[in-house]
Image (cartoon, rainbow, N blue to C red; front, side):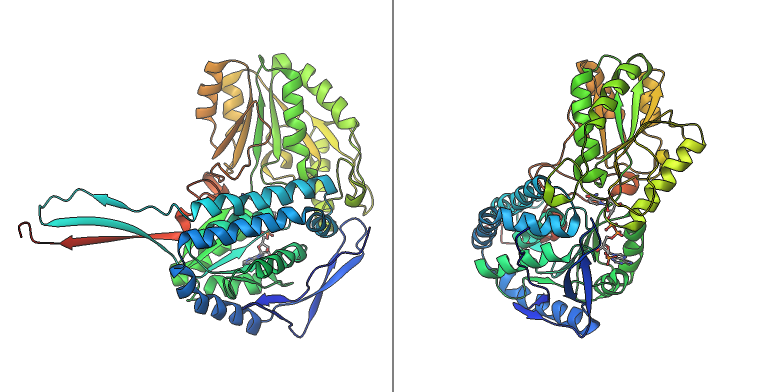
Length: 480
Ligand code: NAP
């Protein structure tokens, strides 16, 4: 791989700021150090919050059209450097290069989308009950916001928030995941170069997410926190935000059912399953976690899916095969625990084998006979493991699909239009892929129900959580 270029200090108030200590960022494939990044101390975090506070009055007063032009420039800058950006993502996240390239395009699409939305922050007028009154509602930005993001999509999870926040007129302090701060810093440099004013975007990488995240969440000056990550941390953030009564948006974990009914097109279902399961080596919040297949079609679906999975090749991300390594040793241990638990309770391992040793290159696994007492049923697997269960009929498939506290996405394969409508409405999830294995797109509202989160990102609804409604009752004389 040719040498990578990226900043490695915090980006605060338009400048690069170094703290006293640094932490290592490592290639997930072999653990080799690829950078030592400045570890934001409390003073750096506070400087970033102050910068966001100072920049807010000017940024909110900047016309939406002007803010939109800067966002469009940032989208174009990402597109212009897609290969360099993708290589940074692959280096720190481990995903195959083609997936990083797709992620950069996807991430840039949020800036492009919100460049338009910046011009459409509509208010409303309400017919009054009195002839001498006008009732007018306008939208105002909530203020400086904190963004806390995970490692699995280091660009896209950040741009989905930044695009909406900046379009709405908010300023920001972002804390990327410890494993993947470089993509966020590369993005900060691009934002700087296209002329996003100082203080509007601040990035504080850190090795201790709880400390830095906690400081942002507790800050009186921060008026909103937008978090993407695990349900467990999301719960802590919601509690932490109570002290200052701030807005909280949460994009949390999923446990997506992938329902295949008896009349489904098996080849289409297998193609959709391969995307829904194996994108980002299964480390996606929208990854198909439990396959629920109607009995009549189970053998045909399982055989074809197993054949497709056997062809997958795991390699270092820069070698650009089908799958990369999982992110770290904890991920390997979790996958091993989930697979061991399933086989001990009667599941059959029909493709792959129990991961041995410490290698993060996990060959994909297919398990059949998954039952509700298994960890594979209740937990987000977050790795290249297919967990297959069978259902008697449509009614039982729906009941099984909904047997989870998560409600991010569900997938449904059936050719019958009536079943599509009936089952999609019965499935408890914020998003439904119907004969479709990939639901994420900037134009559509992304988000979950139940314990998968609060709020929506992307779409025309994406700026809602970054604005307050201000209502004005205006009295005027009814006659001259
Ligand atoms: P995570 O452990 O919850 O971490 C997410 C972010 O929170 C990181 O930046 C982390 O910093 C920070 N953090 C950790 N403890 C914190 C605390 N007490 N207070 C404030 N911030 C804290 O999640 P992850 O392992 O990176 O990501 C995987 C999870 O994200 C999965 O559950 C996945 O489903 C979910 N996810 C959801 C969506 C969605 O849109 N719904 C999208 C992608 C991923 P450190 O890295 O320094 O610990």
